[in-house]
Structures are given as structure tokens and as C-alpha cells.
Amino acid sequence: MSATRIVNLLSASSAASFVGQQVLIQGWVRTRRDSKGGFSFLEVNDGSALASLQVIADQKLANYESEILKIGVGACVTVRGTVVESKGQKQAIELSAEEVTVLGSADATYPLQKKGHSLEFLRSIAHLRARTNTFGAVARVRSAMAFAIHDYFRKNGFVYLHTPIITASDCEGAGAMFRVSTLDPEKLPRTPQGSVDFSQDFFSRATSLTVSGQLEAETYALALGKVYTFGPTFRAENSNTSRHLAEFWMVEPEMAFFDLDMNAALAEDFLKTVLRTVLVGCPEDMGFLASRADYPVHETLQHIIESPFERLSYTDAVAILQKSGKKFDYPVAWGQPLQTEHERFLTEQEFKRPVIVTGYPKEFTAFYMRLNEDGKTVRAMDVLVPRIGEIIGGSQREERYDRLVARMQEAGLNTAEYEWYLATRRYGSAPHAGFGLGFERLIQFATGMENIRDVIPFPRYPQHAEF
Ligand code: 4AD
Ligand code: MG
Image (tube, rainbow, N blue to C red):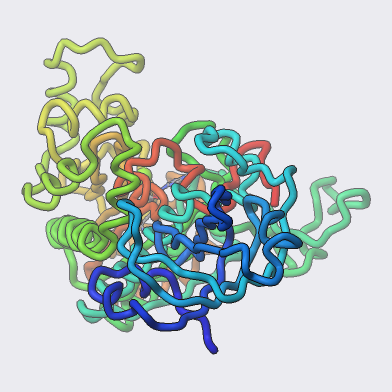
């Protein structure tokens, strides 16, 4: 007899039709209650849904005394039984057990005995936290969102591209990269000048974990038209915030023949579609997560799905912030990057909907962004949403060879190492654009989870690479 998943048993459309049938379920015990009437209740959760199934085990079962009465919270069981209508108020059906087999016991040291552990504590047992309602729901929503993203691009004619994880180029030019090396740190080979001799390293050069798949994606966009990557990226920045991870997943579409306006329109449609898909597709999990947040998550998402995003230039954004009279921790000045507090003011208070800021000063933006006619700003865009601030960063790319080389030199990059990238501008260059979405920030935004460390199974951040 093959196992039935609890999600199928409990779904409104099938619960009644299962009544009277024999089924087998497999899952982990959330609670056990023993009744004086000579039977026990087990709440069994198999991870297929938020809800658990109530199992009734009668004392007549052969192993009732020897095993069932000793089942601890966290134990894994297989139950064969008959689906019956529940006499209780909480559930429509329950399972009247004919056989309960303990596959794996759990004793009183199981850390998830009591309800209501703090998220900080659960982070320290990330190998078990998926067995809680919150982390089960986050995992299912995360998975549904990943599929919704792939669906969106597939329906819109994009090719899904795998870009390298190990790279010799620094896409963002920020230098916040994790080194990849097989050199023995105790015996580093040296050049005659005394610096580390990476020519003796595995790749005969210095390599790192990628911060973005964009540069490689650009070369494929200039061949296939529309591509996207969806993979892990790494940043060795010492940012201890609720919005930064050292390892996170990024979604990066890249489109030939797109200008900045088309790029912004795609970002808006993409965000709205993915949010709508999970709201419709994961009602129980999204409802549960919303119920534990301290603001109305559904109304916020619904509002965002329905509102046109505000578009505004960086220069106008700076003027609005300066006129606002708000005291910010970081002063606002043209030529300085916008901080999260500024971004949040614009989206939460000034416009009360997502804002797409364009035309940032070239000084603090990446080398690949297309220079505007003013010679001072670039065709960059950031999409800002409430609570998170920047959720997407993107730009129209500099497709003109000479300008690109000039900006790379200004940025101090060794253009010889980027010959392959520059070749796309020498042969059949075309206007193109793209953006990067931080996948965890999107999940944070959709679920109302406060800390980005709680929307990825095993978070990596400064001082933390357990598991
Ligand atoms: O703005 P970023 O740095 O842009 C790029 O990497 C471009 N190459 C993307 C592109 O145009 N193809 O990063 C893009 C997004 C940010 O908007 C943010 O959502 C997320 O990635 N992000 C992070 N998420 C979690 N932890 C971090 N440390 C992040 N850094 C960026
Ligand atoms: Mg950015």
C-alpha cells in the first residue's frame, strides 16, 4: 500500500471522498495526547501541508502499551488506518489507526517540544526547524516562488541559462569576493616580487565565487535575445543586517534590444505576476505566515499588485528627501548613494507603493551601466519596495565599446582580463538591459518574515556557516 500525502487527504475537495477508505500515511508526530477512554491522539505532519492529520490509536492495538504510549514529539511514524469523519471541531476528518509503526523514535531531548520558540533559537537548530509550522510554510512558499519565476520567464520566451559559480571576473567591481583556491595557505608560492603566485593555483589565476552571473548572461543575451539565470551568488561584505546574506540566490534576466524603460516595465510585470501566483497558489501557507507578521501582509501585497509602480529619477528622489524635513541617520546629498532609510521613506511614506529610481550618478555605480547624455548619470534602476528597500537592481548596459573601455579604466579594472566581455561590443553589439532580483528579499517581502536569515534553509552570514 503506497502512502497518501496528508495534503491530498485534507484538501476540501477530497476529504469527504476519503471517508471510509483505508490509507497509509507517513510523517512526524507533533503532539501525543492520551485519553482516559483508552486511546491516544497523535498529530502527524508530513510536510506536504501546513495542517497535521489527527490519528486515533486505540488501546486494542497490539503495540499500544509497548510503543504507542511511548511515542515522543518528533518521532517518525507510519500509520495504516481508515479515514473517518471527525467528532472534533478542528478538522473534518481523522484517521482511525489499525497499525502504527514507529520508524524513528525521538526522546525528551528533541528540541522542539514546546510551541513558541524564538526565530533566533530556531536558527541555531536549522537542521530541525523545517519541522515547525513557520519553516515548513516558508520552505513551501520558497519552492512555489522558484517555480513561479521559471514559469514567468518560460512563458515570455526566455532561455534559462547556467552561468559559472567560479569566476575570475568581478562583475560589481566591489571587491567583496570569496577567494577560491587550492593553494596550501601554510606554503603560499610567491612571485619574485613577493606577492602570491596564483599562476600555480588550480586555474593558473586568481579566482573567486561569483557575485553575479550578469557578464556571462550578457554574452548569451547577445546571441539568444532573452535569457535569465537563477543561481547562488556570494558577497563577502561584512553586512550584519536583516537584508544581507553572504550566500543568496539571484534571478538575473538579460535582454537584447531592451532599453531602460522596457527593463523597468519587465521588472514591474515580473514582480506582480510572481506575487500574484504565490498568493493564489499557496493560500494556507501565505495565510499562516501573514497571521504571524505585525502588519497586514495580504493587503500590502494586493495593493502592490494593483498599483502602478512610481518611476522617478535619482535627482528627483534626492530633492524629495531633502524637502521632506525628515531627520535621516545618513545625510542626503546629490552624488551619495541612497541608504535603506531613504529608500524606505520614498516607498513607504512618500509614494506608498513600489518606486523605480533611475539615473544614478556614475561615481557609485558599476562600470557596465550605460552613460547618459549628461555624462554624469547612468541608465541604472533600483526597484524599492516597502520594508525591504532595494529588491531589484538593474540597468541598460553600455553597448558602446569606447565608452565601456573608458569606464572600466576609470573603475581600475584590467581590461585585458575582460577581452571576452569587450568582444561582445566589438562584434555585433546591441542595446541591451537586465536586472538582478534578490530571491530571498522577494520571499521576505512576500511572507512578511522579518529576517532574511529565516527565508533560506541554511543561512550564511558573518561568523555563521554551520550545517
Ligand atoms: O544590485 P546588485 O548588486 O546588482 C547586481 O548584482 C547586478 N549584476 C544585477 C543585474 O543587473 N543583473 O544585486 C541585485 C539584487 C539586489 O537588488 C538585492 O535584492 C540582492 O540582489 N542582493 C542581496 N540579497 C541578499 N544579500 C545580499 N548581500 C545582497 N546583495 C544584493
Ligand atoms: Mg544594487
